[in-house]
Length: 183
Image (cartoon, rainbow, N blue to C red; front, side, top):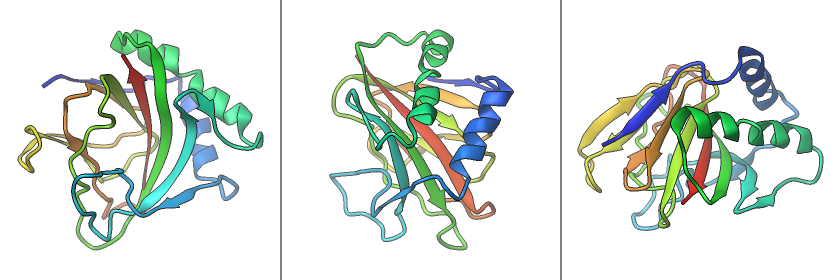
């Protein structure tokens, strides 16, 4: 199992701009019943969250209002490509996710992969939070590695690793940006 981890991967000014934009009252978030998009298992009622798609299989999203912010997010791609030595043919998607505290105990989201096609994934943590990312042994619920969200940290892993997020309990929110690099 290979999970690469880099702290402070983006310049601090960019980290802060991304955080301030995503936590502003003007930023548009869209509700999803199932934040991890699992198709094979029934969802837990507390697996909901909010998303904002920056790019979906080469198609920019939005109505022009956030073009400059979306361009900024896309400008991080060469940084991830260089730091993690990612070889890819295209961007599958760039999705920003917001999970909130849903109960007094953490909810584990279903183990999944981000796509059925060969890819590498990068998760960029926008804020310090609890609500770890958990990597599993195969498709089981047997935990293998746990990554704590820390502002400015990014992790990179390949398409075969089953993983899932978890909801925060101590913090009010967990914000991540997920990049899917298609091979």
